[in-house]
Image 1: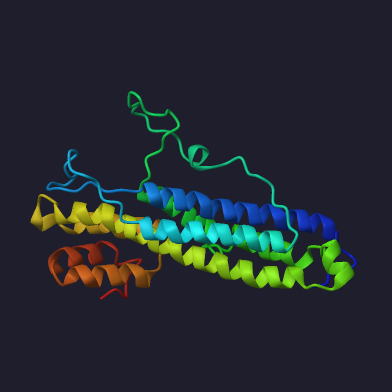
Image 2: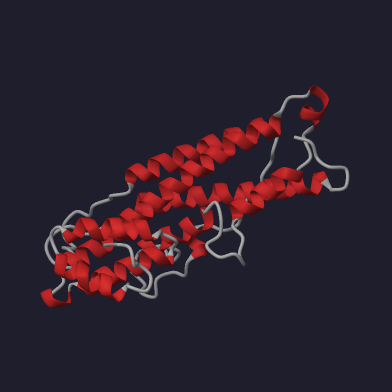
Amino acid sequence: MTTPDYVDGAAWRVELERWHAELANTIDQASLWAREFYVRTGDGRWGDSSAPPSYPLLGHADRLEQIGVRLKMVCANASLEPPVLTWDRTTLRAPSMVRVPGRDPDWRDADYAEGGQYLLYIRPSALRADSVTAQQYWRTALKFAAPSVLERELGIPQLATYAEQAQGLFDIAHDTIRAAFRDSAAATFGRIWATWPTQNDGGRPLLMWMTELMQFGCSIEECGAVLRDIEVVDPQAVAACRAGLAPWLPDTA
């Protein structure tokens, strides 16, 4: 990869390191979230607090953790030195308003909305034309970043190799976080729908569920797939949900 003469390649290399750090940190924090996310088991809408909880996202957490380790190796092989960032799960979200005696005041409840934030951060492109994602900034910096001394002197294609490997890992991380977010939303709203007290109003929890999926960037097709699965057991609730979502989901039938 060659840096044009009219740009400050060293400054762009610093930018590349910074945006790599942002993306890698997002993946690391998402892995911690996925490991801590749980749902209560037992009967009732909110489960039984005395029953052992279920941790449905551990597989996603393991995969994200592995991606984080591989990104460190890819970065080192390219002679990049990303900065250490100051944000993490404790600064991303406000602490719970309810203080639990004996619990760390920086503790955060790992809910589906936190996972949705990571999904927005890791997106390859923005949902709106007037915004830009971290990956887009990263790709721009990659175009203009200066090569390392090792690459200049010995001709080793460090940045080209880094670009291919890092982009592949970012793609896998995005798909993993997306799947983890969908699963966390299903675990949250699926219980609410299944235990909804009024059968004639079963479309309301589904409407909340689909609205949250769309808010964090899930597609019409993804929402439609969820509704089609539920329609097998609760067609009335799905019909009510589709009626409420008609302006946004015209093709989920």
